[in-house]
Length: 171
Image 1 (tube, helix red, strand yellow):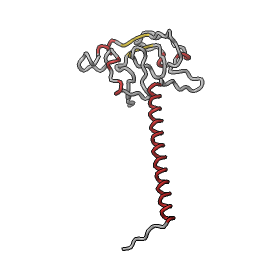
Image 2 (tube, helix red, strand yellow):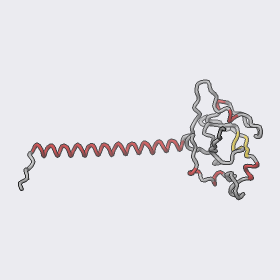
Image 3 (cartoon, one colour):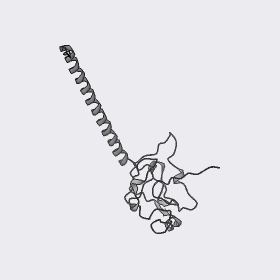
Image 4 (cartoon, one colour):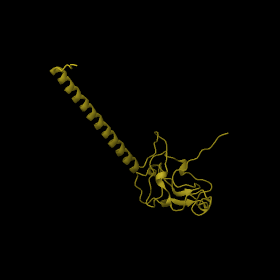
């Protein structure tokens, strides 16, 4: 059997096609590497960021979380402009409060307890998530409210440190 050899133009065409394919592959690899680097940079930025309330013009930041609750002690007063964590306020001194029934149900002390331990550093934070974004912490390693200052720290009537997910069925 006789095989026809390629002409010079066919060989040149093959070389050019190979070069184009190689160039395309290299560009695609570079694009994927840049996209991965951008994704990692975004994740790092999200870990460091403290989300701020998104307000429509004229609205006040999470007023309900700063209002009185019948079973809570009085909160420290937080002016609207002082709510975002990005606003420096070295003298901020929130009321600290965790309800006695929450403390009594510490899952590390009471069998069948439903509340987190008193010490927030003993919580497995990588397993926790919030729909508000990454969890940020204060100088005592207590999670910060992602919407800003509320005039109170610790857990109040909530059993968990950080986000307390709940579903309230309506019948």
